[in-house]
Length: 504
Image (cartoon, rainbow, N blue to C red; front, side, top):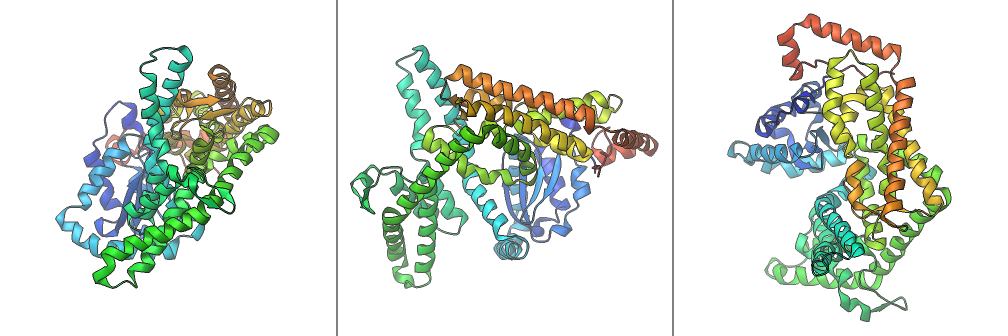
């Protein structure tokens, strides 16, 4: 496996159009691509035949930090910022007349066939949940940061004429997030997005306070994002049922009317009540978990989060985070999980110190470390720790230690939460919130980061870089030197050459 992170290290801006053009033939060409999407760091492709992709050649491309092959998606790790530009250029390549007709004819059929043949129901469900909530992350980040700034201004008594405006700007999205969840849910599950949003809007409509279900008067927002998700799913099912039975001449009138009516009444007289109970259980469960088993829970959550990130399964936690933010104003789970990134940073620094004669690895670490400090761990995962093997495990140990630190203080009554999801590492400080005030909350979180750094470094320095790993790295450097300069640069996109493979 070759490493391609070094162009970042030299400060060269990746040419997104060239990168997109280079990726397309290596994933089997346009006829093999059935879907295109991206998250914060990865280009996520649906491939009709994943075996047609050339994984080794993809890893060798300049700017490609790694490749993750999942049952239902082929994920090319590019890093924040870069992935947005490359995705746009990639979609433009697919939209050209030479490929659009073929894609349009085969795309839907191949995607459904691939999902049936390769994806387990569990993984398919996780991917669809991620597709609903991932597009909401930029707004959650922006509004969360503004809410934090507004809180500081309110506490300090500064700019009293501006704070009401900032409150409106920061809070409006969260007040209507159910509508966006409903829209995205219907879009993902094959319904009309605007109908999904219309039914989900019932959840936050103030007039529901006049409705009684199961002997209880409903409250606006009851059920939160889970209620909106369920409402849009029901609307999609009703719409599909109507499409197959309503005469075509009446479809434009009856289908939307029946969809909103049936799904709306089902939301009011069932889903809001049930989703409200589930949302309350999530909040109670998260608080109980950290208050009673905080150190142990933090140990487990912080230690296991890096493997979840590696597999892309961390996206499944977004609905839980969003529910906690909607319900309590912040999620107490994200700061604990963020400790995994601290362990990763500590491990990378230890590798940098131990392998002082390997210029390639040290260059990669220098390029990826700033992103790691800001909570984007994938460049370090795929460029350093995972290829070396043991440093990935010792990084998990650092994350476990940092999580245990934050969890221990949660047991003492010091809650550390985040008002938005997406950032972690040092980038999470503007989004921190807790029950003891900003100062103690930030101190506990900083202590967790430092603990993760220290344990990740110590564990990796002592156990992660063995003589076997060092010998293999040295052998790899020797073989690169014997290959000749032009061959090395052609294979890796820079002077780095091949990355050592994972140790057993």
